[in-house]
Image (tube, rainbow, N blue to C red; front, side, top):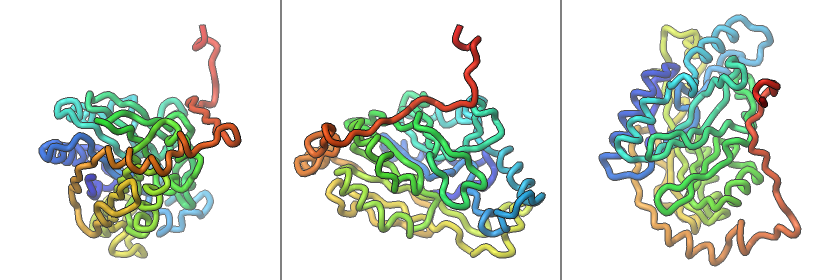
Length: 310
C-alpha cells in the first residue's frame, strides 16, 4: 500500500509520483500495489470549505472547471505511464482516479477505481455507485460495470471506493465472484478505517487492505482557485490511516497516520481457506434458494445509436 499525498490538482505530476512509488513497490518485491481513492488528481476537499452548495456560484463553477481540466481521460492515454511501469516491472496496480469519460459525454467526472494487471493492461474501471454527501456536488453516480474481481497470484482481488464499502449488496457482488482480497480505497483519515477494516475482513473472511492518502494545507496550490479554501480549512485535511486486516478480523498492520509510507506485507492465502471453513458467503454460507442478487454490469450511457448496432 502506497500511502502518499497527491500533487494536488495536478494530474500529470501526480501520475509521475504514482509511477515512482510503483517502482519502489516493485523494488520491494511486491506483486500488487494499491493507491487511495481519487488520488489522481485529488479529492475535492474545497467543497465543504468554500460554501460548495451555493447554487449557480461563479467561484464554484470556476473551481469545478479547473477540476475537470485535471481529471483523467483513460481513452486519451493519461494512464499509459502507469500501465507501462506495471508491465515493465510485472506488478499489478489499483489506483483511484477522477475520471472524465468520453462515453458519458466528457463533461462529468466519476470517482473511479482502476485495476491494471501485471501485463500493463487495464482490466476494469469501476465508477463509484453513490458519491457521498458533498461529493455529489462534484462527482456523478457510476454504474455496475466495474464490479469485477481479478486474479493476482493466488488471490481474487476486488475493491470499492470509500463509503461504497458500506453497501452490503456491492460487497456481495464481489463475494459472489470469489473475492478473497478486498481493497477499500479511502481519501484519507483514520476515522474511516479503524472501525471498518476489521469488520469487512471478518464478514468476507478475506484480507482487507484499507489504503488512504494524505493532504495538508501546504499541499494546496496557491495559483489555483481552490486556494480560497485556505481561509477556513484545517492544517491537516487527510491524515492517512492505511491498514491491513487478516481474514479472521485481526490486525496485520494497524492504521498508519501522518506519514507517507510504503506499507509492505506478505499475505498467506491459506489463511483465507482456513477461515472459509467457518463462513463462505458465496458458498456454504449462502442461501440462493431464498435470497439472490442481480447485478447489472452493463456500462450505462445516455443513448444507443443504430449505426453502432449495424
